[in-house]
Length: 100
Image (cartoon, rainbow, N blue to C red; front, side, top):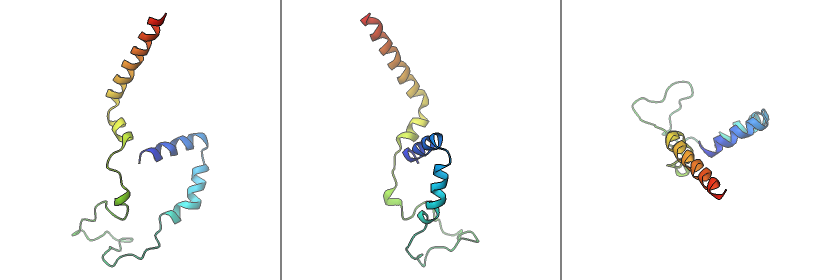
């Protein structure tokens, strides 16, 4: 999540329906793997995985995962960003007023 989510929202605002058509075309195959399922992986399509094991949220994409997101940070610090933006606007207004 992050930049790709923002891009998706912007694209959907500009051309609604285009991403829906693309995902209908490419979404299913992009979620499939050509690798065989390991013998220790649970077959949990019709019933829950074994409750004795913690499968967590880890998997084959752990190496590509990011530990920090600027978008998440910004969404959690609205007040700070608003204060910095407001101070910047006041500073710019002050500089412009000084030039006159």
